Length: 350
Image (tube, one colour):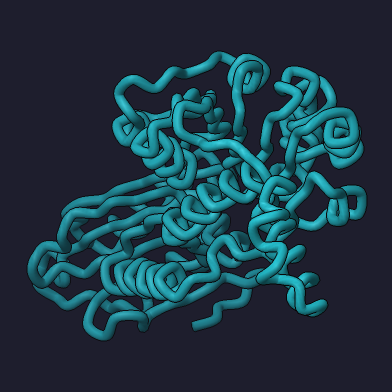
């Protein structure tokens, strides 16, 4: 879509509460052998022995409480910071690790929360470890996160630590995790099945339930609709995965707003302003932001030339769109969403 000059949006944080609640649930599932107990009672019920054995067999499924235990949160974005905050309210000691922690996320954390300088130091004394980081192709040595919870990190775990992975299955080295589960009383709770772990007695593997709540789906839909509406009506870009974030001032009264997407290379802005000058048009305000290989230009112009003639929008847009390096253009005037044009291999499309 980038090469077509079209932004792609997502809905960060819309499912944060739903996933956070599942993480908290996962801590309980990893502490009390609840799933094993449920299955045991179903088997007894099928034999007609449930009432007789309900008290006798409870010792088979003993566990521990989470209050007073230490939780390591790896990744402190929307989900991680929310998990840390609620775990603190439940009486847990919380430590976090996030090399990209920003001010906005930091303000959401418990005031007395510790921050570690590495994943190894964060997990070394933790009873529970929650992974909340994105999956990036490539090993950690290559700048990716594939297998970032590998043998070296798992070696730092306490023998009875519970790993909670509701982020991505590929973040965890399955073979190293299996070796850890085989060697002690640790647990693995996740909603991503792995061939080496799905049936392990110390693993609780769920369907991919993270965002599967009515509230999360409604919030994501509402956020997506608001984001697209704002882009269509004003040109503002928020939560885009391929375009630069662009907060825009209000369009001046009677002004015409044009957005032009170009390749991010030297001289493009000069070419655009030159085209407006050639048409004897006054630029009231302009913004230029870039991200990677794309630049996003927003220009508010007077609707008339200096001698009072109205702007010939069709001709102006065609000239701008056909400039070398321009990917697409839009006119935000009148009907929201109309006025989109593209340059495809030297051909003009509207």
